[in-house]
Image (cartoon, rainbow, N blue to C red; front, side, top):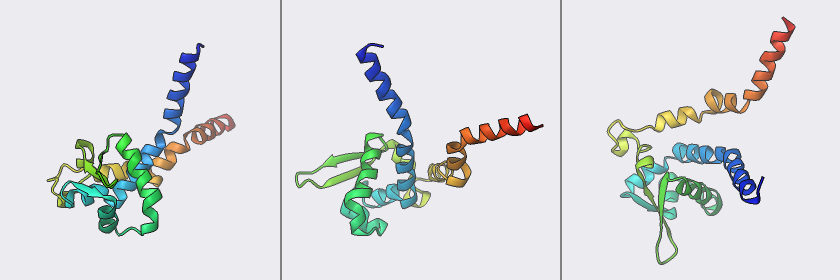
Length: 145
């Protein structure tokens, strides 16, 4: 493989390997109600607005929530603006507007429950992450028959 092809292949492999981080960040934001918090703040919210609306401990903001929001901004779930005073402002996108609940003004178009179901550990996440073990165990059971 040429250097360019190797670099491209490595990048794609890392993107696939780390793709679960986007899903976990989406699940975190969905469980916390970030889209509703931004919607109730008029469609845009700072970190301080999110902390107040979500009742989060201040020590969690600089690292965890900010990182979650960065992943979701990079994925196009939320939008980000930086004001002159370096305050991060997050906005809804067409994607995140589908996470706003009906009480948040989405009139039955919310996909929040679907996202929460798909990212539920016992229903979907654990079985998906244990697929190789499951396939192996089925193969061993078949051999013993």
